[in-house]
Image 1: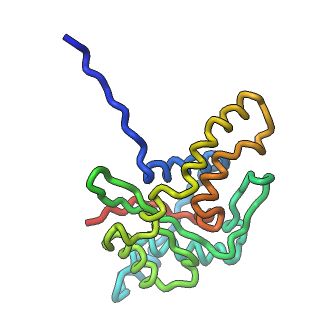
Image 2 (image 1 turned 30 degrees about the vertical axis):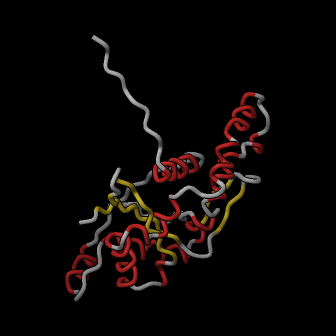
Length: 202
C-alpha cells in the first residue's frame, strides 16, 4: 500500500503581498509597550453619540492627531539606498480586512490616509466600503494581482542568492527592493501609526 503524498500549493499574489509586508517589517526592530488607560470618559462620550464610531476608528484618529505633535510617529526606517528615516507628510492607518475569494480567504489592506483630518463618519465609511463593496473594485485587491514588474523581481531571486553566497555588500540585495518598488514604494506603506485589526465581513 503506497503512502499518502502531500501536494505543493502555489502562493497566490495576495499571500505574496503579505509575505512582502512581513519581509520588510522584519527588518525593523520593534519594542512592545503596554499601558493601562482610564477610558471611562471616552466610553461615556461614545455612548451619548447619535452614531457610535468603533473603537478602531476612534484610536486611529487619536493616533493620527498625536502624530501631528510628534513627527517621530510618522517616520519609517528604510535601508535602501542607505539607512535613513522617511517622514510621511501625514499618518497612514492600515486595517486588515478579511474577504472571501472563491478559492481562499484573503486579507486585504484598508488604508486610511490622514485620519487626523477626517471625521469619524468618513473613516467608518472607508472601512465599510472595504467590507461590503465588490472585492474586484477594491484597490488593495487590484494591487494583489501580478504586477508587470513581478516577473522581473522573480528573475532577480537567483541574483540575490548569488550575492548572499558571494558575501557582497547588502546594498546589492535588490530583489526585495524591486518587489517594494513594484508595490508603490514608501508612500504606499503605513506609518508607525498602524492600527491592525482583522475585520470580518458579516
